[in-house]
Length: 167
Image (cartoon, rainbow, N blue to C red; front, top):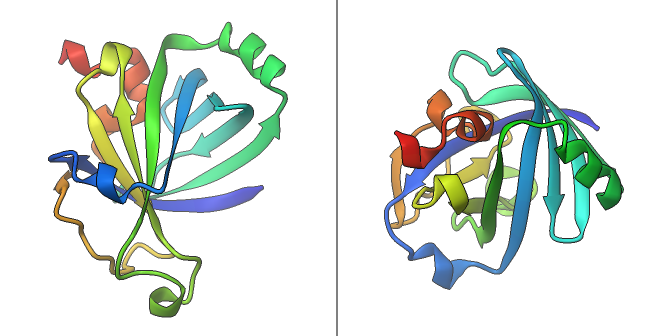
């Protein structure tokens, strides 16, 4: 499926999100290609795997082309051997986004994806929300910190090359 991904990314100031989380998943991912303007990612999420291609971000850093397809987990494991840089390991918490949903936006109910990193990115916790448009309004939970949308240091592809613990 090809689509335009529109998302905003924030640091997380405390663990208040945990009480609001409705599910969590362990994600392990690596990058076959991390060139300017394009990335090719392989991800294993619990017992499923995906190959994702992302295009160049817009000037604001909020929008970019994204194509993703589910692939067999064994294929993903083999593809991980082709990855450049380190492997990203994190737990993703799914938190319903209060104040924005079908009734409020006319789109699918929104959710926060809060990623708590381990390994070389231990200590980093970021939250992302996918939106229907760059100007869509949403409620900011109390645990949300500084916005880092468009700051390339926080792109997972960059964290695989220059991990948070080495900043």
